[in-house]
Length: 343
Image 1 (cartoon, rainbow, N blue to C red):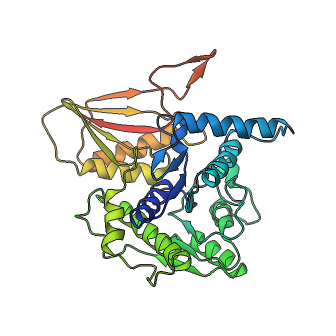
Image 2: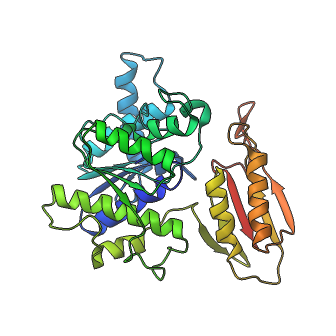
């Protein structure tokens, strides 16, 4: 699974659907919220401390026998996940790319059951802006579509024309049948957690991917967009922290989202704008100062969306991106970029 926004959510929906339908699932995603063990999940549960230490040490020792200076943090965790899923007898693995797709560490499977591309936008321009094509957006689409494999079904949400042209061209080159997925009418707004059009679209893409697995490996005669009660239950029961998430904590209510690009920050702002008002202070906690992702521009986008929605922010707190300084963990830092908090 690749894309600019929503790929983690789609992976979580696919996992929940297939687990609800009876499969033993493995899910590999990034980043994590609280612990690195969240990146490697079996049947939705982060790998236990005992198993993580056991498998980590085994893989680490094997790799140290022949050191590889080019093996990085993400590469190691990806390799670790494959070993874990194999040893634990996982039946179906769902993988989210880290950055891009073509040269991503997860992109080593030659014949995946299916590949999916979520909504594309401008992200990681320094890394993904370089490629064989003549524009930034085309090169980003080229990198993302690198997960397509010859003869394997590919699915994408409806994209901007410049992105879609590249996806369709690469699919044609690889003889990978590509299907454009819109919002499935059976993914209703009254299903728990589907509060926005973006979430409905992500869930619809997940249904097509999950059903393709059921068709090919479970000999189930289902259409890619068929929504059975089991599939709908899988969508409904999916839980994915840090994405349009609401948490009640004592007298406070927290609205949390990890948006880190223009498209996502607008979705988060619109979501928060539709929340019923209450006569209490509203506080924005914002964490994004990196130049690569344009923290100032994102903050302006968020401000404009909230202002258009009639949302008044009483206080703002800006937190650091620095997790480590002089070997000491800085308290209160987070791996996610933006948090909206309403009291």
